[in-house]
Image (cartoon, rainbow, N blue to C red; front, side):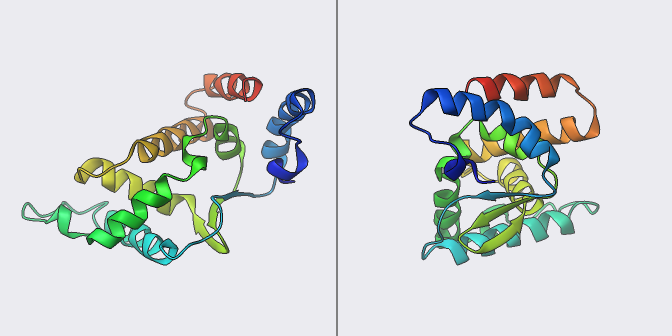
Length: 171
């Protein structure tokens, strides 16, 4: 089921009806693929930067980061530019994607044919948020969505489902 294909976005009545089904669809789906769009010339560079940041966070998850660590030297300018462009894709600025990401199990993020884990994106955003000056608003939005998902999945905040339902009604 692909919402952009299965829902006539121009028909407000149909869209309203289908949005009510989305909670059930995402909750019952064995896996959810978030598609960010087609790949472009920068995609390999951006994915390499995501992977670098994710590995770095894994490496320092349990070991303190050295005091003299060069946070700004982790990525070069082309990697930063490519990563910023990825985070400017429309998916990252849409509030209604919250239910897609929060309610879905086994969520992966795709650019073109490249399938990546949401953990890689989360780790990269976490690193950027903590250690750089070039974090984007879209990256902050993604971190918020990840935190909502974590709270929902762990059962820490059952009110999150009500939030997701409210957002589904206002799509």
